[in-house]
Each structure stands twice: as structure tokens, then as C-alpha cells.
Length: 488
Image 1 (tube, rainbow, N blue to C red):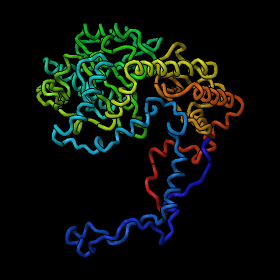
Image 2: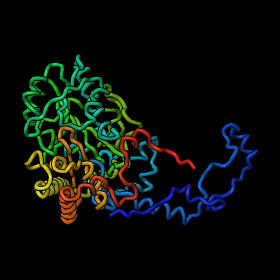
Image 3: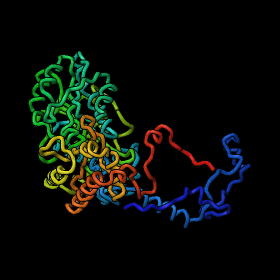
């Protein structure tokens, strides 16, 4: 449970005259400095900084860290969406000076080790996806979507007609339509059927010669694997269109099925979701894109290649049909190194086991909680289950938001709520493979207790969180009118 502790701002702890004497006095006088820097850029009075000693600083920020909730301190059922556990060995090795201090403009003969890591990761991702080409440049998932659709557009343009539309199921990730528009296409929504799969009748009615691709999230945001994927691929290929797979949920599939074998032509892979390196808070991430052979010529420059006879890795820019560079330098190297370590440590058997346990954990939670929370699709899910607060809302006016806020009182970070948008009062729970049965049982017990509280004492949910440093915020005003600076 999060303590109801009070904490002042560091400015409020300031006492005039206190300081930490660790910064040496400048060895150049101010009057000399004005000769080097124009006076208009120099301060005329000291900056308004807090005056505190080292002990105060350490205690202040240590106490603030205790107010935070993260995967290192508590169960975080947002799962691989943002907060899959990241093995600490990944952090240690990726921060080695020999990797962290490399510069991308160094002579290529001095960066062979890093290029070998990048090449090895690319080969591993090609094996996992079953596809033929790879780029590691994209900075995250949406950037990967953008890159893949740009590649597809370049293919069609090269063949005389870029086409006009990209089809997107209503159960897709929300970034898909934005990526499509950025690439010059118009998105067209495809409805889901009663089983949570793509409605094949609706797909057939909208699959015209102007359709470039379908963006299919597998498993979809309902946590379900679309059993019609091969039929969908065949329909698209017959139309001369591509099947793009949003691979953000690969955590459920890797080592079990290769997307290319189901007819996928291109996909992005979120290293920061499936292969550790959580990017909660906005970064960093990496979203490599893998493609089938006919799309390889259009991948971003440069491509990392191995020259076997020289036993040397090179950055190949000799790809005239390439869409060009889509990111500065060659990718988010820190994330790439962590993903490479993760794959090498697990191996093929371990990679498959990750998916199996992730799927098992999600189904275990769903089965245990479906008596207490509405389960719209009461069947086997993949890496995540989507429950709802529908019963609690109808019976006692308790919203899914109330349930999420109450979880904070019990020391558990809320799962994703109100997504997917096609599910009313949605609670998307993704435990991943890194959580033990004991942790899941504690979470299940807390969720059951909250369900009981909704029946007997709904007001305690309406006011939650009750024991955190900050209580219920006005989320609309917090987003529209944030306080970004401190004033006396």
C-alpha cells in the first residue's frame, strides 16, 4: 500500500545560505568571460535555485521515488504495452563503456562489434518473423508502422500506381490510422464479427483495386488471435494488396508461429515490448520492420550486411529504390543491444516458453475473474484478457476508472482501461511471462475484494485512491491546464 506521506517541493525546503561545496570556483573572472560570451547572454543575477545541503537532496528525491509506482516496486499489469520487466543484466551490459560511448561517425572498422550485434539481432528477428529483410532504424512502434507503409507505398509507386486506401480493423491499435494518413493513404475501417475477428463480409465489400494493404493487429486488442488470418492474406494477395501485421503483441506468438507462414508481407516488432526495455513514460523504444522479399529493395538506407570473405560488416547505401533514412543514424542502439542480449540468453526454446507462459498467465487471470467481472469474449485469449466493469457500473454506478484508482490503494498499478474502444468499460489486463502465480493470485484476490467493495461500499471506490500522496485528480483539467512551474 502506498503511504500517505507528505513531501514538500525542493524549493520549499530551501534555506538561504545552505549549499553543497562540490563545484569549484571558476578560474576565469566574469569580466574576462564577457570577452568570450556576449553580455546579453550572461546573467545579471544568480539563478533562483533551491539552497539545500546534500542530505536534504538525497532524502528528498529518495522519498519522491517511493511515491512512484513501477515494475520494480509492484505488480504492473500494463504488461508489455509499456512495463514488461527488464532483466537488470540487459541494463548492465548495454551501458558498458565500449558500447555506450561509441559514435556513429567513427570509422566502420572501429565499430565492428556493434555492427555484429545489430546484424545478429536482425537475423534473429528475421528468423522469428519468417520474413526476408529487416531495418532496425524505426524509433518505436508507430514509427515502425509509418516505415512499413512508406515501404509499401514505394513498392506500388515503383509499379506505376501508389493506390489510395489502407484497411484497418476496428480492433486495431489506435496509431494505425495516423500512420496511414502520414504516408498519404486514406484509412477505411473494417468491422469485427461476433467472435472478435475481422468481418470477412465487410472486408470483401471494401477490398477494391485501390487498396494497398490491410493493417492487422495479431493478436488484436481484444487479446484474440484471428483464426481467419490465412484467408485474409489470400484475399489480399489475390487483390494484389499486402498484409501488414502490427507486431506490437508478438509477445504471445514468438517461437510458436512465424507470421510470414500465415501470409504476412510486412510487420513491425516492438523491441521495447516483446524483447524487454520497457518504455513507460515515453521512451526509449525501437520498432524494427521486417518485410517479404519483394519489399526488401525499398527498406530504409543503410542496410547492415556481412561480407563473408572479408569477415567484415558494412553499412550498405547502394539501394536506389530505398525510401531513404527515416531516423538519425542507425537506430536506438541501447534498446537494440538489450533486445539482442534478451534473445541470446533465452535461445529458441526460451523464446517459445516466454510466449507460452504469457498466454497461460493471461488465461489464468481471465478464468479466475470472469465470475466477478464481465468477460465479453469468453474463450481462450492470448497474452492479454479484456474484462469490463460493466456489471459494477450497472449495479452500483462504479466505473472502470473507480476500479483502477482503487487498485492504487492496494499497491497495484492499474491495467489499461477504456481500451479497446469497442469494449464498454474495458479493463485490459496483461500480466506477461515475468509474473509468478503467487503475484497473480494476490492480484486476483485484490480484484475480487474490489468487486465486493463495489457492492457493499461503492463510495470508497468513488473517492479512490484514498491512501496515496495525491488523491483523485481532475484529469480533464490536469491535461488542459497543467501547472508546469513553481511560484512562491
